[in-house]
Amino acid sequence: MKLKYLTVVLLFSIYLPLQSQEFGFGVKGGLNTISIGDIITVGSNGANGPVAGLVFEPQKDLGFQFGGYFFAQFGKLYVRPELNYFSSKSYYDFPNRQAEWSTSKIDFPILVGYDLIGPISVYAGPGFSFFGDTTIEGVQETGFTTGDAGPDIKTTAISFNIGIAFRYKRLGIDLRYELGQTEVAEEREDFIRSTFGVNLADLQSYNPNILSLSVSYDIFRTDAQNIGSLFSGLFKNNKCYCPYKK
Image (cartoon, one colour):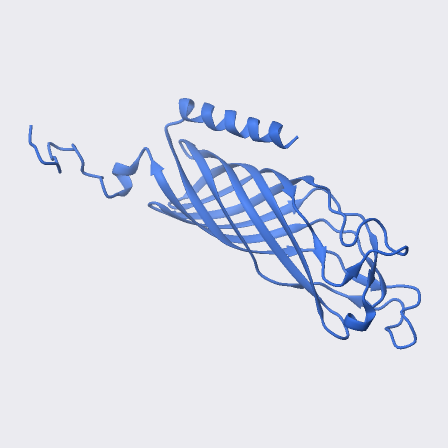
């Protein structure tokens, strides 16, 4: 399945320059936060443990992402396939100490945007995600747990992206919200009570929604003459910045 989506993105990226007015590619990186489910204690947490029904809400922490993109411009419209790596994390404030939740994924969003006014544009589009390991610190696999030790996130998932972007010459700033379309099912986890102060608890179902802020840089653009670059005057208007003259 990964190869199929990668092939589609690759063929799409090859086809777009043939039809576009302008095109280019670049690199990007930034920070993100992710929304995940509450943890609720259940059953007996031991004589000195928390009572059943105690809710621990996830506290957002900053993750990071980096990647690359290709874009093709059609007047005010543009199409932008990307390839990104995400590392995201949150934590739970348990009675004895914090437990970190973390995951990573590779993302293939295909975005369609529209230039609103000046350097500001809006965009939306689907994303295809391939998750790596997802863990919660302190979870142990026992006969009381559901599945493996930690959240059982599907390795492949689909999301929907919406965002707003600001571009100045080769630089861009991008604020994006990614809505996960694949729900993570509720699971029962068994924590190390002596370390975290929690024993049995349910991780509530959730969609892994991500808010991200990134900075991008266009390495190559076909309209580089219009935005300025190191070689913006090369062989233009009878100027030649080279050892010989015509």
